[in-house]
Image 1: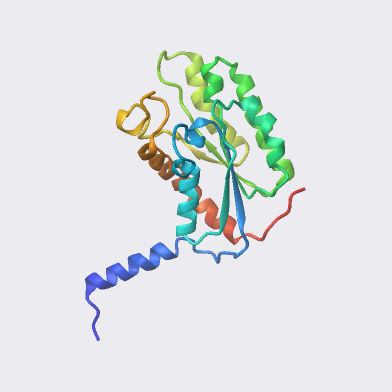
Image 2 (image 1 turned 90 degrees about the vertical axis):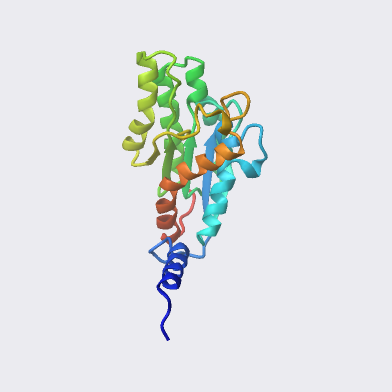
Length: 222
């Protein structure tokens, strides 16, 4: 019996969608910790509308067994992240998503201090979870002025990712920042539609890491 070409294409598409990960996937649940500020916390929205919850849905749809913990806080800073982190280090972390720094920059915190705090956060996570995969969400300051501070801030995330062998989302708010239709009335925080785009921005980088992590043997917290 001949199968129409169009039907074959549909079947291939479905099979590919169900087999996003080439390597065998372990049935053991893996964990993702998101440490961020109001952008990751979904300010003004339901928790289910924030991008970490949307990532959990994407992981589930891909057949990947992950628990996503969103440890983000409105107004979160790098110093605050350091203070909050210990309570989240008691459990194993397989993938660590770090999204902090923009509130520091809005307050004019010295760039060296921001970078040092972020590095300390990464170091503490790695000390307890040597095999953790680090994903850094990059941010940019609005171009109020093309000064050295604005330029330096935009570079620290790529530098941290390179230094720590981590993955980088170049700009978390790509295709969202500055678009009134994708942000709340404050013009700063993404609305539900904007959060969906944030999830896509992160998923492009996270998906291959999640596939690799899902196939790895489980590790334990030190």
